[in-house]
Length: 363
Image (cartoon, rainbow, N blue to C red; front, side, top):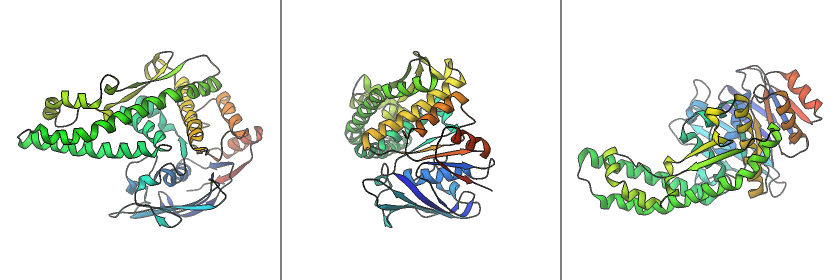
């Protein structure tokens, strides 16, 4: 699968732009602030219906405009037919995703159809940021190949929001009535247990692939790991919801559940954030992303598009060489690489014998 072309209207700093891509490697070069990352983010929109960098669609509309549109043609899924994907947003309205001009009933129906993996400097937040970022990261991976998981997650989050509203109302106005709360508990508990099981199994199955990539990139014998932490590992969610009834009432929100889970990143059994160097952390994150590629490919028999934002500034020459070895051997499918130095990226790609197309972006 590859993205044949893209058209942008009022997307971030692009008023009108169109690009025709190579099905192999596409190098996007230009000064900082020229729009290289924005182009990669537009591709992410066509896959995930949202930006990789912002939670608010309005922030993706060009300054002083109230809408944006992204259109792209994908080729080579189970056949050679072209599939047109459109993402259209208007302020005050709703975001619309279309496949071959037909609007989706639900945005979630589109997730996973055209898988994409983004590697960007902000990924360091996975190590140093909140547990919510790590949950979203793993949820995003699993949702690309497991529709049932995605729908369970959406349902759980809706029920959780409604339960929290009810808890807050009862706390502020009274009286407390557990029978109303348990209506939500009975629906949330099986969803939470199922989500926990799929997260646990995914981490266990991905770890060998993760270790393989780390060994290749780092050329070392360090053991990497992910410790999935969830209260459900000790008891089913129904037990925790019942046990915490009074605590939830006093807090005004649900204190335990899969929405509080976390993933500890480990190297040789120690926390990566505290005990690993910056170089080790960068290699850890890149290995994690590449293992995501392999896992999705195995599940869907479809190579995700790989977006490498500002990668040459973040890795040393040895790791860049190893990454491009995989690219040159066609381990990956379509790849996009952004860089500020056109001479550098051309030299690196030519040195590794990688067929590519250069796009020079000016502000």
